[in-house]
Image 1 (cartoon, rainbow, N blue to C red):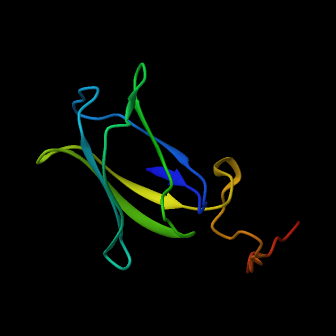
Image 2 (image 1 turned 45 degrees about the horizontal axis):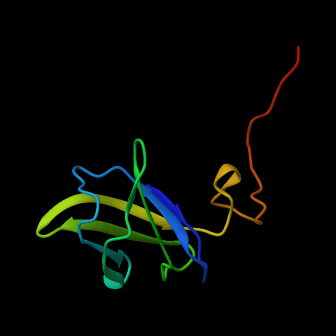
Image 3 (image 1 turned 30 degrees about the vertical axis):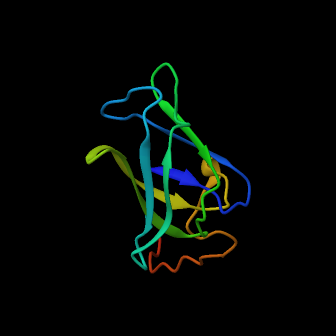
Amino acid sequence: MIVLQESASAQNLDFIPRQFTSGDTYNVTIINEQTNTEVYNENVTSITENLYYNRFNAIFDVKQDNFYMITVKSGSDVIFKDKIFCTNQTVSDYTVNNSQYIEQDTTNEFIFI
C-alpha cells in the first residue's frame, strides 16, 4: 500500500513495476474507491528508474482518509497496480483513533487471598 498526503505540492510515488522501458509513455490512473471516480489520469514519460524501484513525481488530487486504486499501464498492459491511502498523519505514529480518547471498560475483578 502506498501512503500519500492531501497536499497541493508534488509528491513522490515509488513503485516496482512488472516491466519497464525508460523513455516510454505510461498511463497513470488513480480512482477513488468510495465514489468510483477518476481523480488522476495522465500519460507520462517522467517516470525515473532507480536501482530497485521506479519513481513518479506529480501533484495528486487525493483527499484525507480515502482509499484509491492506482494503475500504471504501458499501452494495454498493466505494469503496476496497488492501493493508495491518503492521510496527513505521519506514517510512523499513525493511529485510527487520532486525537480521540478510547476508554476501556472491564469487568475483571481480582481477588487476593
